[in-house]
Length: 318
Ligand code: NAD
Image 1: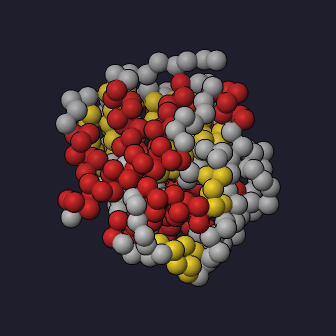
Image 2: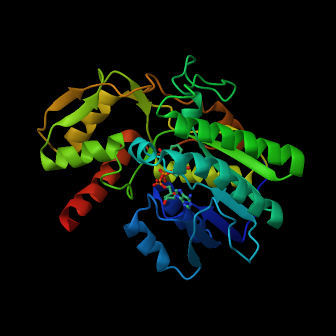
């Protein structure tokens, strides 16, 4: 297994939820880290923590425009994109542009510097999958014109562009397909399942589960996900490679676990299903185990307990 060493990283979307954890991990490993972010869906509290670090630099910039950095990087992680359905449904064109123009600018930066490039793609490229669990060989079942297509197709385009830069320009690229990730640093109101359930349970309000609640998700704690991104960067592997937790839970089970962790007696309320919401989602991570020696270490109960502390603190700060 190859292990690359890096001194300088650029993280686009570095003020977001996953990006901030990635910056923190890279700083802890001794790198100089530059986060490039336009703050469209960023988490201000985590950015403030990063700014205290003297090897961290923040550049406020929209990555759909050429990225204005002079110092050469040796690894570029491209995470800039709205990721929560609430955000990308509110920012449809911006999301398409982040996946298309934004990916091109990030690839151009990596090409200029001869840097390793890691694309944060998503399990959403599998759409509402017809194969289960999802292996990287599966090409997906995506509605190209539905409301969610702005995210799914942007990421599919980003994967195609990344692959073309590898073939045409010899850029040292890698594609990570990230599955549902959660943890401290998520915005309370970002609309994703776990922040919504925590906020509702802590407020004593009903937990709103869409559809029957029997649809499944695999939830991966953010420290595991960013560990996988760094392992992929350090390997020579191009991917795509799934990063997620194969422990499959129904949405109803996630709601019940969160209620138990915060000792809430809130009801669970079933509301209309979301258009094109995937019914089953579970990664096959045999490739990540084999080529990266990576697998998640933190189980759902442990991860949800650590996340509960973040949402409790947020409520106290309100
Ligand atoms: P997030 O919304 O918390 O962070 C995204 C960051 O990108 C934000 O800080 C936002 O301000 C920034 N951004 C958006 N458009 C930009 C632009 N044009 N220029 C500069 N910055 C821009 O989302 P996240 O959960 O941290 O996701 C990060 C990445 O990981 C995304 O690419 C997402 O698709 C991918 N991903 C996340 C998950 C997950 O469960 N969190 C799952 C699969 C893939």
